[in-house]
Length: 325
Image (cartoon, rainbow, N blue to C red; front, side, top):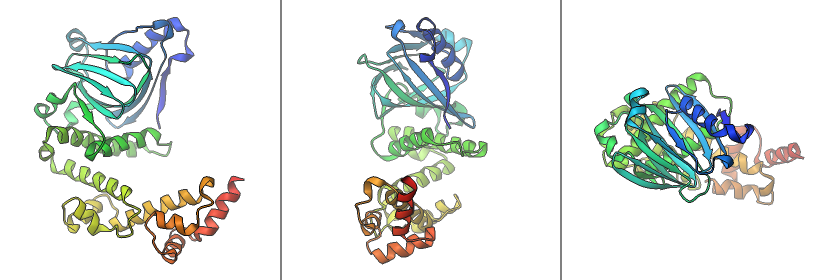
């Protein structure tokens, strides 16, 4: 669960910029700031610990930040930080690279190298999800990652899409994550971050085997999620889409103590239950809900739904409707 670190709106206007600098110093890395309109400054930061990694959700009015060689000599936690811009535009200069990063793009930077950044390039507020983790945990070598620091990385397809969706899902997660869950998720998102960076550098093969396996697992999960509507979705189709054998696919899922068929079934049932419980979809026939998620025959849908839930789709919808009234 994301925990609020600071919301400067709770403070008097004259204290907000100093409080922001202090909070980001503790939660992120030491930087210096310039605020174009300090009297109007507003910002929030929430954070979630993921073992040795941390995911932060930030929103802020326009500001400039910079990390100098002197600050690095004074304090360097030796972190990689990769930000997914979720609103607005941000500019960055690091390692000779200069970029304007827009909503839906990633930005990689290194706490051990000086940088200058501008949030709110267009004068508007901006927000981002920031994953930070020790550089020693990056399965990709520094030589391969360094050229991408300060450059905009796309999130629209491939590993970038999987990584972005994972960060957003983590930011929305509730309180049911245990400490062990967060440690495991930290390892997973670091592998996904590395795969995203490696994909942009065309060095995916440079990842160690265990990282490639994690990446492949999440790629196939994303493919399954995007193709639940297809009645023919099965292990063979998933394997073919990723140019691997079904045996390899089953081995990847087995490492996560699940099967491909169970995953497909679970994801389909989850979507069906959601739609049946949605009051806005109550005019849609039950059979159409099943067909939407890959059950082309109503009898197959009814049988699978009863096996998964112990009741019929119609009864489930009625109970959800009654509960909501």
